[in-house]
Amino acid sequence: MSASDHYICPLLQNEKEETLTTNVWIEIQWNDIRLAWNTSEYFGIEVIRVPYNTVWLPDIVLENNIDGKFDVAYYANVLIYSSGYMYWLPPAIYRSTCAIEITYFPFDYQNCTLVFRSQTYSANELEIMLAVDTETKQPIEWVDIDPEAFTENGEWAIKHRPARKLINSRYTPDDLEYQEISFNLVIQRKPLFYIINIILPCSLISSLVVLAYFLPAQAGGQKLTVSISVLLAQTVFLFLIAQKVPETSLNVPLIGKYLIFVMSVTTLIATNQIVVLNISLRSPNTHTMSHTIKHVFLELVPRFLGMDPLVDDGEAEAEVNGVRERRRSSFGLMQRAEEYVLKQPRSEMMFDKQRERHGLTRSVGKIKERETGRE
Figure 1 (tube, one colour):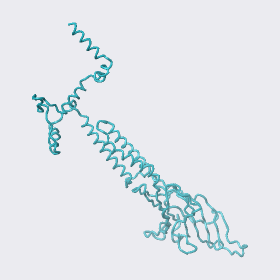
Figure 2 (tube, one colour):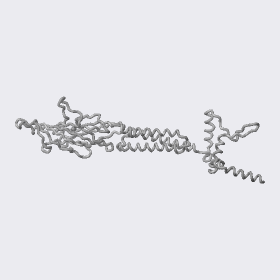
Figure 3 (cartoon, helix red, strand yellow):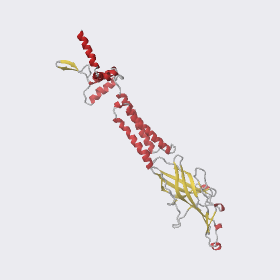
Figure 4 (tube, helix red, strand yellow):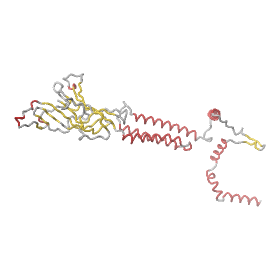
């Protein structure tokens, strides 16, 4: 008996369940000399069509099916030729196992196999062979695809489709596992959908975290908001990838490793920004500079950079017009300005000029002048 597989289309490749659903036509041929006849005795009839349940059919089933359905989709009629040659071409929809290799997702290849074997006959009773090409007289060691009936899948492309007969040397010809026919489908994923919807947006969003360093320290929480927003977006993309790949701990896809790496970098950037904000938003009214920090950043670092050391307010005096005038440093001015801002009521700070513009200050001054004149 010979068999070949006319492959039509992979209806569905489910990565989460690691299954492959295919629509195939199984071409099975065998000889039964008991059904041969002389055409001259039967009006030159060379072929007849009989129902499937009136003749013997080989019990060839898909060994690696996952749903427990061994039957074909439709039991077609059997062609019987005058020489005893029998031909059966039933359609079938098979759901088989297919181990998924997710390392290079979404630029991956998958090798799915359909294994057919007799369910009750050993090799001594029924020999399974690949179909033979009528022109070359060689076994057809590939899956035959009908271009007119083939429907291209939008996610997968067929790259190789070899077929071969397997002999398991661990068993004897009396065992059912001794012989089997294997049809392999090497399919490649079409990555354009994932590039447009996952990889490209993720790369663009991840690049935004670097722009947070261009924000000034006075921006406050806005610097940290950028990093946290990017981190949340990366988490969403990682969740989308986790929904597509199988739940396995054997391999981690490269795109998942990339997202974990950029999430780690984003976390470090957010931590760095927290430290920067904590230092930049300090003031003399909230924190006191320690002696070690003062010695390092105000004495050692300026000396290493070739800068003049800062002069204390008590030591900075200059002689102007013969009078030794105390010179105030910019640091002292900034400190006093901050103290003034903290001590001055907000209403006086905001409406000082406005009161003068509306004449309130001038009227108070005139009243004081009149009182002085009366005295």
